[in-house]
Image (cartoon, rainbow, N blue to C red; front, side, top):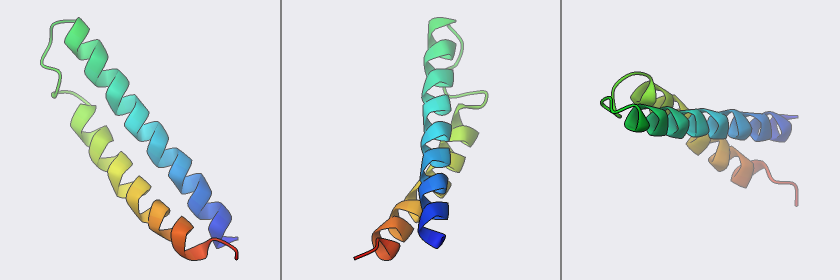
Length: 63
């Protein structure tokens, strides 16, 4: 069960990172400051979710 939760957390973290990338690109195309807005909060949240989930996937992988 914990392995499945870590897989779900991994995809949530990846989605946050993808949203941060999209926000960065849209703001850059719109000629606004690309690192302002929701880019940095989404990046921080994505990394804070993705990295622990990767560690949990590594530790909990069924052998």
